[in-house]
Length: 85
Image (cartoon, rainbow, N blue to C red; front, side, top):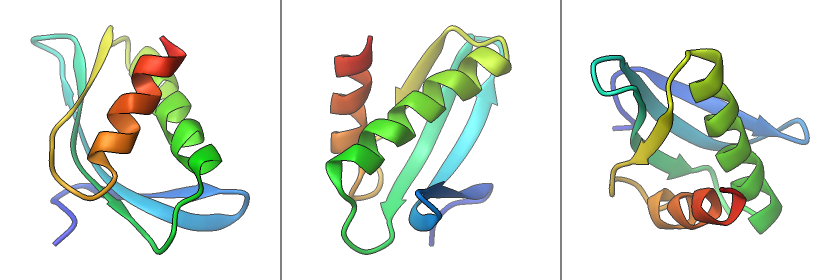
């Protein structure tokens, strides 16, 4: 339902989302294959998730984050990534 390698995302000690991530080392991208909310997700949690995805990509020595259009948070996360760039 949430993906193969689904990871919980906690913000302010609350489970707010589940993300399915994959490191595509050939293209240098962190692939966010699915992004699913857990209830109502406040905008600050979406921004925090976007920052965490950028940090995760950097930690893995990847240069970009690509969010697939799967899950109800995909659009908001893509928008948040554009705002923080």
